[in-house]
Image 1 (cartoon, rainbow, N blue to C red):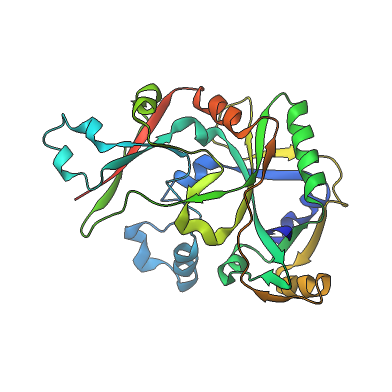
Image 2 (image 1 turned 135 degrees about the vertical axis):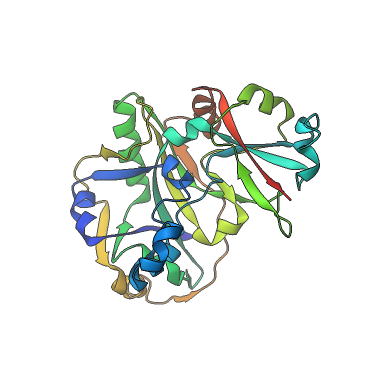
Amino acid sequence: MNSILIRFTDSKYADSYRSGNLSFSSLYSFWDLRRNKIPYEKAPFASKEELLKAANDKQQDFSEGISLEIPSSILAESKDFYPHICNDTIRARIDAYGYCKLLCFYRVDITGSVIQNLPSEMFNFGNTVIVVKDEKEFEKSVINAIAKRGEDCVLGDVSYHDVWTKPREHSVTLISEEPFFPLSAARIYNTRHFGCLDKYVYFKAQREYRVCWLPNVHDHERKNLDIGPAQDLFDVIPARDLRKYLREKYPKHKFGQTYMRKPHCTGTDSYDQFMNKVESINGLCSLIFEVH
């Protein structure tokens, strides 16, 4: 099976890819559910364009960084609260994952005579597409640049998992405002253990490949990584021409549905080693659960 990694972006960022100056977002930014949203009191005065932009912004995901699932029975002593928990499982989101920096791509799989269909919503993320021409060389360049800094990373395909905690009718999801629960206690009761290359199955259509970078300076800011000149690593094309680009590259293929490949992972560390390094930073997590 062949594949190509692509990333939608704005045309004003195209030169940064050609020069090898890669901009990473903070995983923490996914946790801010109010980001790019219009406050209730301002909504009546917002323009149609502003309302549509806010409605189409789907990048927030409070489940990013959820690394442990634990029995809700650990809260059984809270007699007034425990009966209102909907599920047998609650989720623990590890605070230190907010320090990780992410660069995300969509994997277009090519198998047999079929090119994986491109979800129409992907075209909302920018008017320009960055195409990784040589995945192995790209990975090598990123790993070398991060290793030279004495820092850690993992790169690879996201694995998608079934959801064990599901909202009921008239239920709400609660997230502790500050991380308070000791990770050491959560590990004792842990039933499933995830990391930054794991997401829930309802994101499966993203077919995501990502670079997860843990800098030595722990903050929630965006960060740039210089991997050196990258003209040979990337093609930069208008988003409107992406299907044409793929048809010309694979002239005997047609667009359709392909099966997902076995996830691939590499980095400065193994995935388990990377998770352990992140989880050892401050040992705290937030709890997430549904109540009715």
